Length: 202
Length: 158
Image 1: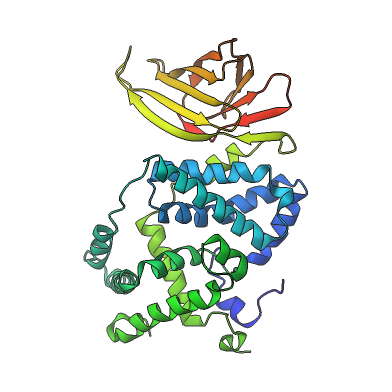
Image 2: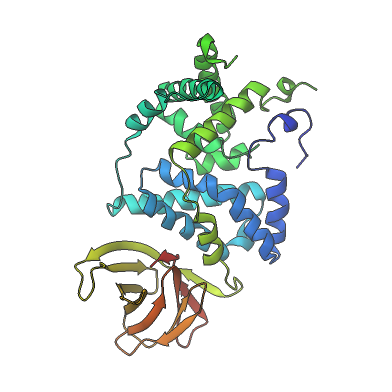
């Protein structure tokens, strides 16, 4: 995998660097515990949102994310590439979350209430108001997306330069479509934000 | 090379938007602060062993027997067996755990917690108990008799 050149620097605030994950994955597969711990630190936030996006409550999500990592212990040597690792973990997390839903340990996430709250920032110092305003506008735009796009971007936002084929399968989308899909969803969001000239997203 | 030339790579605006999306979800639905440590503790095992994951399938709170604290009933299930435990808080800040393995058989029971590991054995009916279990996170490991397989549970807070 090539280190990012041009766009790499621009996306360095993104938390999961596939090159770094790749190196950690190879070391962890060889039995390096620190490397495995590094993978846990980098990939757990994404898995949290995979679990929560399936509509299960926070307590169950903690169990599900742990179960996915525990399951990985016995399967590390079967996984062939770092991209396959992310896909494997996403798949197992989703499967475990579905299992929880089937047994009724789920909650109805009141997303709407959350969105409304975020759109109505409290007054604060001037800079805070600008930040809050920008955030509220972003949230309103995210809210306006179709649910499928909202969920996709929620997870992709925690991954940097994913292998689209592998991750797309894990997300239950046609092979090879997450790239264009992500771009389509991202383009929709960008349009919504850029159309809103007062929000500072230009 | 401009970012736009890289096909599926992100533009600066896209990266900023995705970064904003990430911060929003981190704010709205934050990952529990202890989750990473909990996972690290749970998987700090010898993974060359034959491990079978037992998933948490049920969690109930029962009316208190001897203290004001609620007794909890938790059930884990895996391919080989199910583990049902009750966790009863004690006034001294520890807890008593009574467990029942199904199918019932004598196996080694290990309780991992950060302060001190504990162990016992189940009887022929699969029953076991552990007293004075420290509060905090813990994980159960069942060492199957006559088998190298270990059944591991996720960690849970007691």
